[in-house]
Amino acid sequence: MYGSVQILRGADQPCYVWASRKKHNEGRGSMGETLTKLIYSSNHGGLSSGALDSILHSSRSNNDREDITGVLVVGEEDFLQILEGERSAVAECFMRIMQDDRHKDIRIMLAGKKSSRSFSKWSMHCVKTSGAKRAIISRYYIDEVFDPSRMSQDALEELFQTLAACK
Image 1 (cartoon, helix red, strand yellow):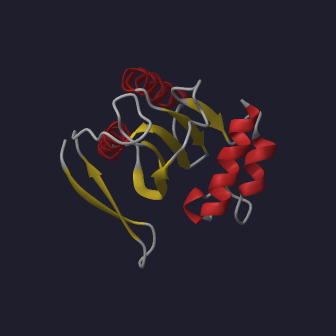
Image 2 (tube, one colour):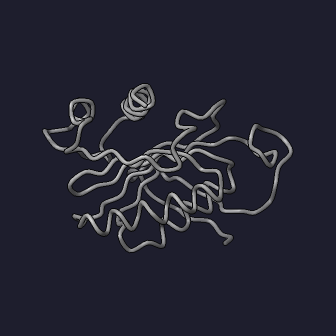
Image 3 (spheres, one colour):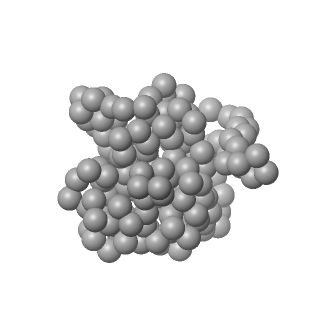
């Protein structure tokens, strides 16, 4: 899949993703690509446990095949996810996510190079905001609700560093 996509994080903060199969010689990925992280949020509007299980099953299968790691934080209405992997694999994964009707109002929160993986053992770990790690997640609530689209970049980084330390 090739193309350019614009997603607005805010009216003044456009973000672009380019999905390409072109391989690069620099970096740390297994195919010579740069190791990349992508953090995005989306609204799911409420999910059944069966729908979440379906998402996790297909994500883990795809991510194992494409050497993508990460964590999916699932709130009552929203997803927050970090993906780690080679740049083209992460871009193609994100393009699939954008085509999934269960994700609405998708926003790229943070993207860039990584020197190493934070979640190397997890093809897709799931953290529910109502689950065992609620004490961690609740520190990042805004107006007493999990709303990742309103989190600062520092808060996003800190949250995922904290979750990585819990693994």
